[in-house]
Image 1 (cartoon, rainbow, N blue to C red):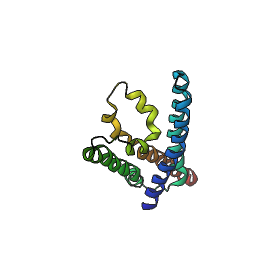
Image 2: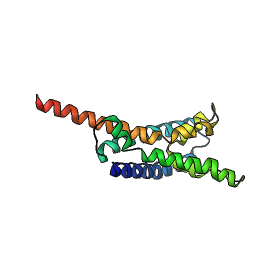
Image 3: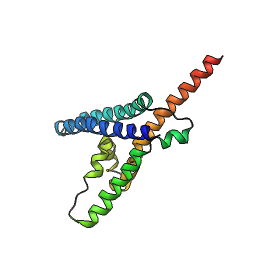
Image 4: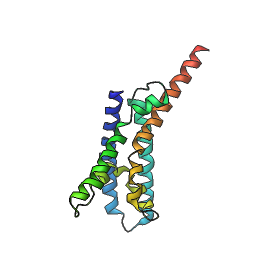
Length: 158
C-alpha cells in the first residue's frame, strides 16, 4: 500500500511538472486567441485525465477491493489538503501580503478548469475539490485494472 501511495504521488508530481510546463508555455502564446486557448487547454485537461488513469493502471498494483485500492492512492489527496491548509490558511494568516502560490502550483494540471469555473464561482471556494481529483482519477484507473484482471481470471476458468 505504501509503495502504491509513493508511486501515485510521483505520478502526480511528474504530470504536474510536464503538463504544467506545457500549459504555461501555451498560455502566453495564445492569450489573444481565446478559441485556440480553449481547445488547447481542453486537450491538456483530457490528456491529464487519461494519463492519470492509464499510468495508475500500468504502474500501480491492484490490492483487492475498492476501498483498499482507494487507500493505496490517497497520498496525493492528503498532500494536497495539507498544502491547501498551509498555503491558504496559515501562510496567508502569518503574512497578509502573501499570495497563495504553493497550492496553485500543486494543482496546476487543473488550471484550465479553474479558469472556466472562476467566471461562475469564487475559485478559492472550489480549490479544495481539486486536491481530490488526482487520487480519484488514479483510483479509477486502478479499479479498471482490477476489474480487467478479475474478468480475465473468470474467462480463463471457463
